[in-house]
Image 1: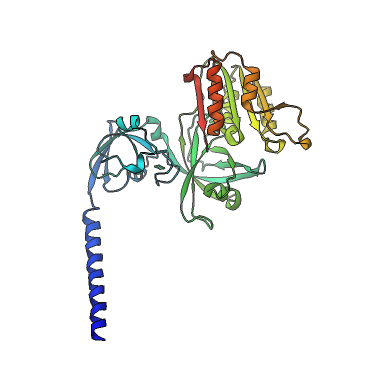
Image 2: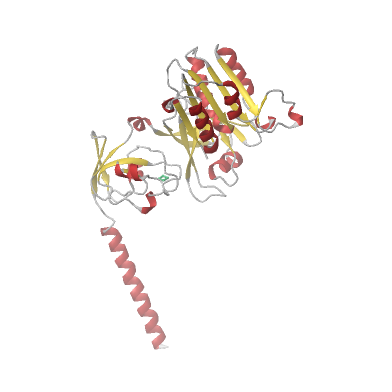
Length: 366
Ligand code: FES
């Protein structure tokens, strides 16, 4: 009996000592003290060392894209690290190409601030803020696409370019035990700095889309970070080719509303692809835009029209329409939003039709 008691006591003693050692190690090894963070050679911050660069930046209210919430699985949080940042990690290799690595590109969520660090980020990221929006519209546009309308409290405003996106911070809820960020393009007019509209597609088991489609209610609050993204409207005289499928309509809609706002006379055609009549949405709004913009044509097409759709419009995919209607794209520019497969095939086709690569702007979504 005594032997058993002695063994139990010794095991407890060893565990206790190990726990103590671990806690001392955490307090000493994990405690890097105050570090200097210099951004773009001009802004200097005193930060607590030891955390990831991503969360250190969030603490300073500098938000960089991060669709996976810092798990190293989206590749969005790339930052140029000029000094500090430690060893490049195997967890970054899947997202940072060897060429990017040579330029000092790192995943901010993987790289830890354990020494003074100097980084370079695009200036516009200083414009990114976290906002608590009021949810004032949730309306199903198709069986799987929700039109989400959000309004900011009067004292806040968001400045975005037509084509950019925001990230929704999805809270913990019944079917999800973690907070996640997910990116969605803005569909509204940038002129309205208090409102944001989104077209949010439902994805089976998608943490954010399930939350929005099944749990969120009008009158709730929603946390949003943004704006982000290099995909946006460029002013020029070139004729515009727009192409999108599904919720890829969102950034194109924002661009079109902006063109209405500035009374654009540019020649533009929007090729929109859907499978059946059930997947078409915002048709009236687009016909209205067509009436307001003198040189704009909206051209929807269905790849699998059903008899009940009574579809008399174009059939096929957006690539079929581009093939049919565009001969020489050398003087045009393009705005494309859709799946990687759709974007890749449209880009190849436009290049075949002599559109210079630098005039093709696109936003791929999964
Ligand atoms: S936040 Fe997703 S990879 Fe860093």
